[in-house]
Length: 307
Image (cartoon, rainbow, N blue to C red; front, side, top):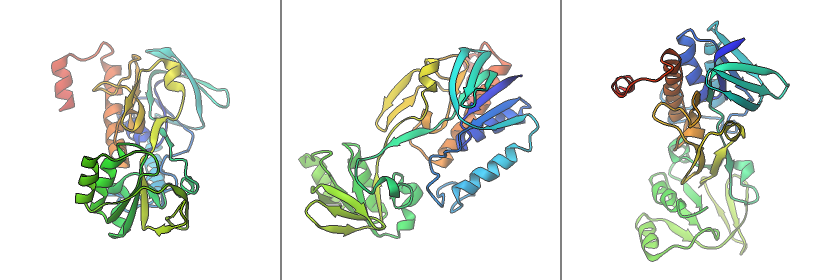
């Protein structure tokens, strides 16, 4: 069987995209490895209508709703290879099966490269975070630590005083010039130049000089990269952003390879469930329109469609 579209990645963006195609009565295969990026978190915030809900429950509900559509096929597995071109793509899964489709939509998410600090990875998503809009409110104006990874961390440290008293750990990742130092001090940020030895307890920072500082939560920025080599296999162009590497797409979410689309964290920044869902919904509609008008819409029509 050749599907209208194969969606690789069945998390929030991928399911939002698949929903648009299913409602257009298109045949869709979703291939999902079951490794949501926020699988460590127990509550999702900032997503209207789902505030405070377990993100795993959001995903389960969404999948159940998709499965009500008869043109959906869901595969719990990992896509390991993709090849072909527009109207005839082939995707190979880890179990050796090969599936074909007219279009590919890649919603694979990203991998997070975190600072090499003992105890940090184990607390990622539970007491160490990246998004204050997702997790800042629950810290209840407590003491917040920000761990630098580079110059972009200055902006994170300047923003977080909205949610509590902030200590900015330079941790050897950058040196502050006079202007940055002054701007941070104006925001009430305390600057800690001593290197971090490890993170213990809930969110305790142990410094190399023996001091221990306790926090309601910690924030840092991860360097992101696509979580699968499939983009390179297909020849999709990548681009560098302040947060890492992402796939390059146009306004219709199509990559540099005709017939291959991408959405969610791997194709946009910044990252959150609500932004991923919106991006996926738009991408799914664009995949459908590419099936209706294979040669593309003219500029006026595309403008109307974008609304």
